[in-house]
Image (cartoon, rainbow over all chains, first blue to last red; front, side):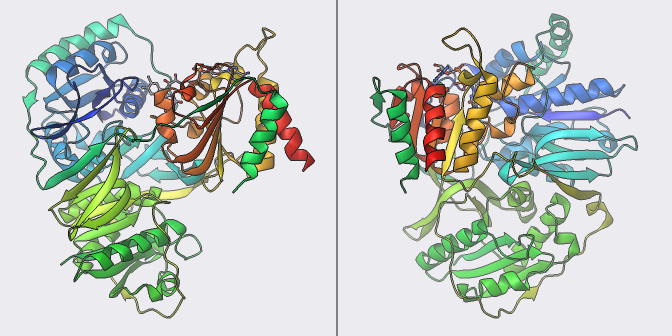
Length: 268
Length: 344
Ligand SMILES: Cc1cc2nc3c(=O)[nH]c(=O)nc-3n(C[C@H](O)[C@H](O)[C@H](O)COP(=O)(O)OP(=O)(O)OC[C@H]3O[C@@H](n4cnc5c(N)ncnc54)[C@H](O)[C@@H]3O)c2cc1C
């Protein structure tokens, strides 16, 4: 059975960058936000790679990638992501900040999904990361699902298996390093991915060329969206003050270190 | 006047878990500091009477329940209707729930149905000037914000370990059952089971005092020019066996397994700590053969005492990230640690 897979994913500052909060006229923001190099949100990236892999196994399937972010940043990230797997971009020109209100983001993304031409709801799988590396709340996908009428939702997904009868077996992360196993009668469904099982695909210039044909027009016609953050007020945003006074132990024999560690472990 | 609804699901044995009792504790404190507020409890499970009795002394104005076999298992399509029904029945303005995987899966969807707003992974909720404010982290535990909202209902998922659990004598509680009909469209998913490593292979122990983190260094060439993955495995498992610590990993180490390199067999990406891994809560953490870079150490936000063993005195742990950095060979140190532990 062919699938129509819509993957939602945002862009986030490269995790190796130092982040510092500042106050902007529209609320909290990151210092030099527009200058920070951006990457595809890691868990959304796993969702995208899983989507492409699933599409490859089911002839006639198609992957859309829906992303909201400042146009120029989206373009920058697309230059690398478009080399990885085939997809059609649906771009929304808006903020990618973690401080935006999730329900407003969900509304914009759901609207964008609903206006994808030719999208077949009966064969629809909506994918995303189970949490972002910016807001890290794990709420946007659920709200998108509700807006699209999807009541079969799964979060922290590490594995999706399509069975012969078209039903889906899904593994979700739960407490204590375990997975909950569910079966769902079939599409439509929404999956918020954790790490999944696939390595990051290598760059493929041919895929890049193909994708770019839709990426550039999608960026050009990206709908501008403003988010009001209505009713939401931040009293403070601060970096953790605690920087530890690290005691660097250089010339202690391993046996003595071991003794010190054992004592430390035993102490309450 | 706020109506505070505490939502909780029962555990397999019908009781309320620690996270639920902590949320109730936090709600009681919040309610006490918001003049005129009302505390209501909403329970979900196959049967909820035992759980209600467990918290009979909590002083809730009402105890609501959604009960039935269909609500035994954590499943979005049934849980979302249960949460929605309880929110409406309570006419809740603030809804507090424990951030369990079951609640995290469904709370935002239910919030959408209730026309409210939601904050998850909250590490605290308190009233300032008669108004509730939530504390939570942004950018994967890199900055902490305090925020408030005017919309209601305001749904907040509280992380465990952030407030004292409610403790009170059990009693006989009267539960108002809220009927929830489950249409066929909400029964397309069935939870069929749990996949877990066998007890002796289970290395993730959320309740352990100590988090032991292994980094990629355990699989790298050592001073003799050889890698010693088999010995690394033996040392690490020996330590975990004796201390019952929880095992964490760096991304580099779990990624190696994906690439089919010589690795530690018991390690999976579920063990990963950090930006794209977990942020567990433990009193102590010991990092070994791990460089301590920022994307990894953001996962240590809720580890109180931190020590690291690394050959490199200039590794990132030295930059104010650990309390103690032992510049040493982790193989030698941990071999001896195991020996000392075994001797005691
Ligand atoms: C988008 C993104 C997300 C990321 N998310 C995460 C994440 O969630 N979690 C995470 O961990 N990382 C994450 N990273 C990766 C992170 O930046 C580091 O690359 C990674 O944590 C390094 O792992 P490591 O310290 O095990 O390995 P290395 O950097 O290879 O360090 C190995 C260390 O072992 C030491 N060593 C070797 N032998 C010994 C010995 N005998 N005794 C003592 N010490 C020894 C070495 O001195 C060295 O410091 C992310 C990166 C990106 C780009």
